[in-house]
Length: 487
Image 1 (cartoon, rainbow, N blue to C red):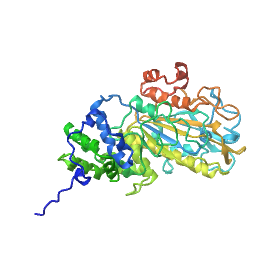
Image 2 (cartoon, rainbow, N blue to C red; image 1 turned 30 degrees about the horizontal axis):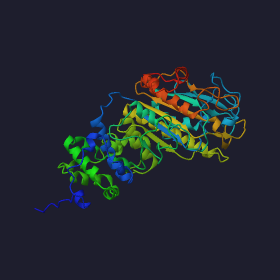
Image 3 (tube, rainbow, N blue to C red; image 1 turned 180 degrees about the horizontal axis):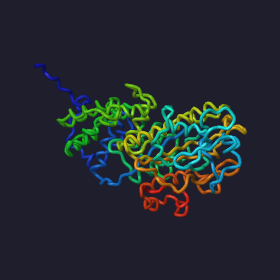
Image 4 (cartoon, helix red, strand yellow; image 1 turned 135 degrees about the vertical axis):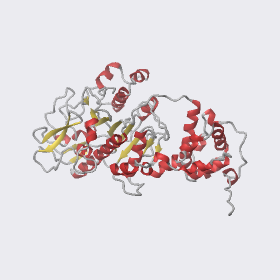
């Protein structure tokens, strides 16, 4: 029989005595801050331990909240050019020439309805546009360009909001994940996820409450390395968790740096060994269901929905699909997706149409993922500013400049049981200058508008008391902006 080589424990490798006298940081809910400043590898490693500390020190909420996903279109997307913009009172505008739609409904395009009775820019009348004028809607309806409308849209509702915002700026306070997390949405394995190395994980500043630092996901393996051992840690006894926490708490700065340069799974294995825990073999269980493509009975369908090829774990579709899966399944809390390239006023229509179609396809895939998992989802689509088109009677005019005063935000809610009820299709509206009408309270204030989005999400979750307790809008304004009803 060959001799099994004994692995040298971490405390020996780092030249440190085996720790036995430090306080039980885990039971106290404390992990040394120094561990979070040595690099993302160690921060990733400690994420599940922080979650375990919270489990031990605070009673969790039994409330189940609708999964929440933000899609930020960085650069100032022409979202107003996808819908049929209305006045605050719901009437059509006299002209849509600055919104890329020409003279308007019945003149330069035929309106088409989706999500029940919401007007979008449909087939063009004159000009050179092929298919729908609203490439966003085209992508939502047919996310894989298979010439087949997604049946999941029958159970989805849509509300838009007119709001002016700063062009090409990451300083707009449009991110509401801090409020969502404060209200109680939490992930069973992963924290709030983002795509950009910012305080929110997207190119937006927080509104009212900043979220915890997001876990930035660059590829599918980041999720696997982050929590490939989460289930194993949850299976440890309290004494074992305490021992593991004491090991981490006792490490010096140089030792933390050395561990931070090690991949997550290896570092955890070494630390568990250092803590004298015998069931290290639990760590070999791997990524569990945080990697949807490795989950039996699920992976093939998620890959089909997102167009992910075999062994692809780095593309945008593969990464977005994994993030969305974890958010909708409840593994993660909030999910923030960031799409670049929406500063597309390059004196053409082609670039903008391509980007708008891509955004719609992402949204369509999110909805289809929720339908496949038989879960609800709330999607918030935002941007930084907007764009203006050349004056033209037809709906194929080029995008020519920034125009943040024509900004729009979208909200989409999906429920596998039935289409969520709404009391209207828009919040505020546009004036005859084809800009967000500043007479409506949220039209000129991104933070108020974002609170209005959160108020709708809270209302759908039956959390009106949270809005009152945290002074999210006044009672009168809540009555004007809440369009989604509790299911």
